[in-house]
Amino acid sequence: MSEIYRVAIHHDNDNGYIEYDPGTKTIKVVLADDGKRRQVEAFLSRKHVIRMAQKTLRDFKDAVAVPTESVEQLKLALTRLWEHTGVYVDWSRPLV
Image 1 (cartoon, helix red, strand yellow):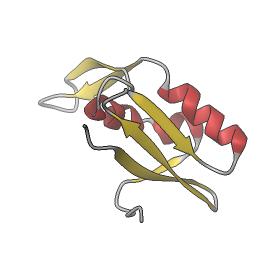
Image 2: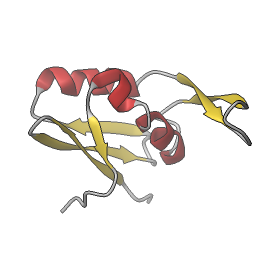
Image 3: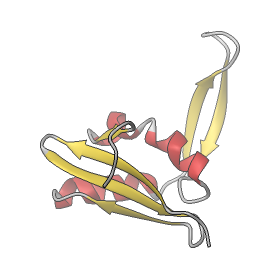
């Protein structure tokens, strides 16, 4: 059995979280704002090509992130979540 990965998110005063189950490769978004929740779900259900800096700031490589494939790919996609949805990832906020 694999460990569930959770990370806190928020939009304005709406605090929620994203949950990823590596065993079933499913993502659950918990956010009270239904429109924002659907927007995050849609973003995390798509494949993303992300340009990542390499050895210098002028040296980029395209990385493909499919958020449902692994925790690492989900984390990579989450680095772009705010830019596309306005929902912040609270990497350091603990979930109780």
